[in-house]
Amino acid sequence: MLLSLVRWQPAARPRRSEISAPRALPWGRWRRSGAADGGVSGTECRLSARSGRSLKYSDPIFVYMNNRWSKVIATTANNRLNCMALVALIGMVGANAPLVAEGVRSSTKHSAQDWLQGYQPLIQKAESGGKLCDLGILGTWHKISVTRVSDRGLQNGLAPGDTIVELNGEEVTSENFASRMSRLDAGDKFSLRVSRGGRFTDLVGECGDGTGLSQAGFDIVRAASAGKWNACIKSTNAVDKLNDLQTAFTASWRLQCFVAKMCSDKRCKRMSSASGRYLYDYHRLAIEEMAAIGELDHWRWHYLNAMTVLKDHGFRKRARELEAAWNEADAARQKTKEVQ
Picture (cartoon, one colour):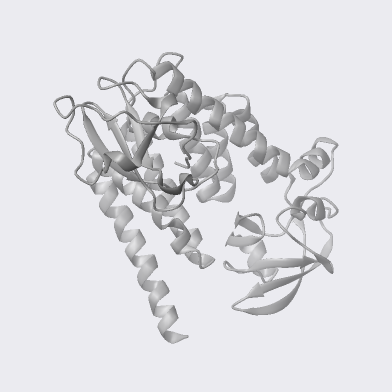
């Protein structure tokens, strides 16, 4: 899960007789999130407060629940999801359970609304009856780094690892990608310049009709933004069927909507075998896609977090399989470095 901790309050040092804290926890240097503070019988999070800076990759977080401390690793900074969302995935108990549950649901909705805002030019075109262009891209990172391609993408010369820098002679960025794409219709010819292996490569191709697939993808995020968790999950399955494979995009929304679905008005249910499977699927696919664009290091702490959660909930086989996927991708990266 992506998380950041907010609303810092000074942490009072608990009595040693009340809890058994990890030795690595330096009480004088840690703060806790007041929003998640459920007391000794509830749940709280603590993190490093040095220099008062924002949460960064690799920062350790200690979660206290079920009368014990667990250590997890921060996955990102400045995201809407917070400590309570992580606690919900682990399994929340205590007086603040309703607050945690609402935090998880609202965080998922806000993330979906942000995503939809970034694709408004394409959404509006589809809603007005326009035919959207399919370049043959099945997965991206920040919209322009290609992580997966379809058969059409291969025909158009695209490959995982490409970064799109120009479309029809115009500069492409993450911010203007949707706007640039909205000018193309199904059947149009196009030219691309991509960055590949440190060099620019020029490609020409023809747009397929991506209207149906794009609409199905929009349906996923629309459902999430409206809190329609079952519809969100169903739509992710529909997109996978259209693609004839899973991607990190669909796996991510399936996981987020399932975790939100687990959170009622009163509490979030403990992690189930289904959420364990969805967590594993998402990170396995993300590892593949991050490796394709040379960003495996970026995913290291996400991966470590997932390993922690899977192990803590008894999904040790899933954890071993995820570790094997990581090791395989890391070995391939090292081999590529040696060749270069």
